[in-house]
Length: 356
Image 1 (spheres, rainbow, N blue to C red):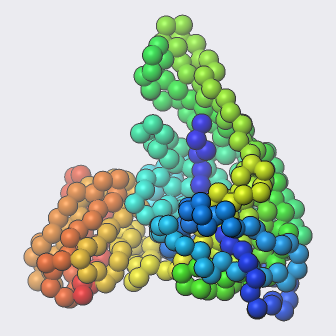
Image 2: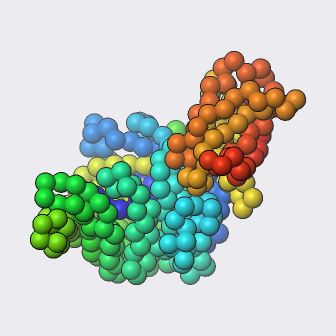
């Protein structure tokens, strides 16, 4: 079964001339909070991944990933869980993250003591489900220092939902996860695109997942095991000082010898409106040129209306899963306003953007 959650991480490697002068400590001030919005670069090319390695461990290490090719980029936003459709299902969370243009959120409990993954809301076979981890997964204990070791065991249960296949009428799943984390290095890391250098702690993450898929027989009315699989993965995560998120993450194969994916902090979206307690729409890019994207933080948004400075409606489109795109190539340069409404026409949010 496909893993249910996506940890918000990124990664890099190499040799750089800068040397950190003192051991690094990462605190809750260095982790994401409500309103954090950033762009992530991804490298999925086998030709470049085959040349990557997580580099050495130890003190005052340098990693240089400044020349990685960018296969694609995406934008992640962190919001208040109460503004999402499944926030009530994760009572222990105080933060939720999602990738712009996709459905579903990961739910997080962030405190001065730890950054914990509470659960996930994702689409499985086209059905949105809420899956909690019991107990929470600790991504990082805080404050974090070189040499820290952590780990645990958690269970995630995918609730049953209707799914017709042969003689079966529904499906459910269980994921048993064992993980172990060691902060095995500290130093400086250089990322691609912006060629930025950050002071960071590197965490080596080991994970073993036992996934079990159960189907319900419509004739016998009994649940039976349909498929089971075991997946072992390794990740190297660089937690940066003063960044507000992880600087990079490298995913390895089951033998911890080959990189299979690489992602890194690319920077802030161009002029993006940050999400806050009172403003729940991500507007990107802002200023716009040929098109502008809107994402409302919950999926009950139905329409978005755009007005010029005289109050005249000049654009309107339906929002799908809280996401909409408008063509602005015919708009004159200047300021515009938008309203987000639900299916009954009630206004959920409003704001402004510019066109150049």
